Image (cartoon, rainbow, N blue to C red):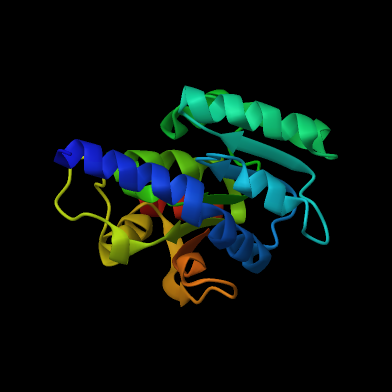
Length: 207
């Protein structure tokens, strides 16, 4: 199996095998309210986990660029009791402002997604613009199992991701190891940043 085949297998394994438990743990930490965006919905672990929260977000956008995973998400959505709150988007995350009004999102989350966003600054600028002042962007990452110096897994250094978020205008950016409750595969690093409450200062910082 070539490098591309190995990387593709790792990517699919992350999405299908290790995502569910990690996503559940991450969303319990975040407790998203209001308008929530999940990037890379994959097999629907995030949508299913939201149903287990005490209070559901009032509006949910689930973004998935893969046509195969998007088909799976449509099936998952149809089975959920809160399906009327969910909007599925089959598109690239760097152009979400065409579907979601800027400045309206409370929380953006992606598990095992940030590695593939290239160029990362372009995506972060877009995501930053979607958030309300005080809104949160959170990545769930499993850096230890990722291939290094790879064309598919581009963003594999947590310090560089934190710096890119700071450069995009996020504040209080942290990288925190979260130990899984049920299985070692559910452990992850939470990389999280906040949009300034003074939005004008934040936009200026991102330039």
